[in-house]
Amino acid sequence: MTTILIVEDEAPLLILAESVVQDAGYETLTAATLTEAQSIVQSDAQIDLLVTDLGLGDQLEAGLELGRSTAEVRPALPILYTSGRALTDGMRSLFIEKSEFLPKPYTNEQLVSAIKQLLQTAN
Image (tube, rainbow, N blue to C red; front, side):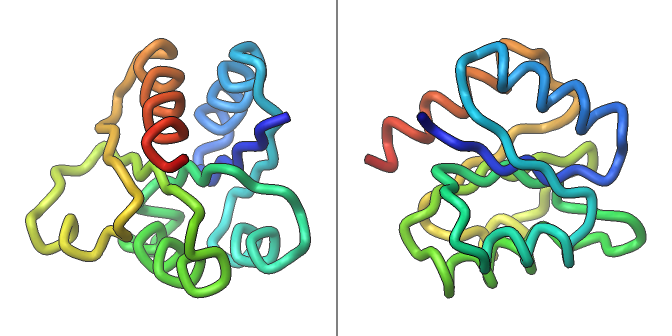
């Protein structure tokens, strides 16, 4: 079973994303903070894809930090970054190689499609 780690600091969005991803047939792990997410990434938990908001709490680039630290521990893990803020070229240059960006707000279908596409291209 494919497992998706979803990192989102806004509880309603986290619950919705988790439900959508599970309905699409994936297992989920969730985290609401950078620290929580890093702990899961550094554990021996199976993770096939990371979906993370770029901003977590008052840390506007926590998702980028999570991407970098994840790449050190799990270099093959693809990442789907999300954000409601405009994406700058400088931010995009900090994305890991196997990653995509999905702007908020996104539909349930867009989330599932982005996950499927990233999983296919990563394998």
